[in-house]
Length: 217
Picture 1 (cartoon, rainbow, N blue to C red):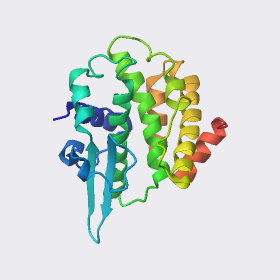
Picture 2: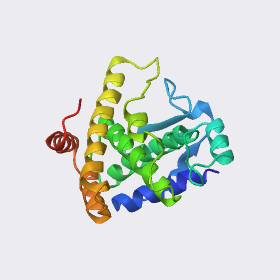
Picture 3: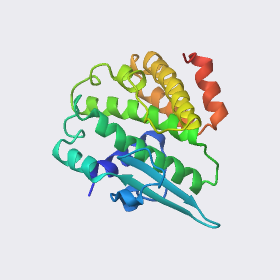
């Protein structure tokens, strides 16, 4: 139904050397009724409900979004017009993997960690996909588009808006450092080692790791 979901999961699993033990497309829903009742994300939402002995997940991607992906697949040809749709799917799959992987390893994960990781994943995969398509570079002004030209939904409460803003600032600083330290040097092995280590850090360690290397604005 959505080959991009499977492909994005595969890319992220390879980058981070993780196995969540399940496939995101198996939890994919397209009916808005399956999104969280208080959802402020009209086209992408990860719904999580914890029971006594199990975790229920549903990855909602709107039917309109999936139609656009089918008609203009960013995995075939990434450009400025479909970058936003690609980022929506990456965000949903990133959240799904984060929750599933931590649950499998019985380790806690915070909403801030999930948002921070998703921001990093959007930047990395856009670079990777552009490179694999032979562009040799990301869409124009990628860092600025993802981290500075940001608009949040009007209905967000203060705490949620602050969490998104904080995740954005830290991810912007981390991705800028990755570009300076690894991407420009053309050392993919060092980059992968760094990313895998970062993925496994807990929240405070991640924020400290970023702050030590670059000061978020």
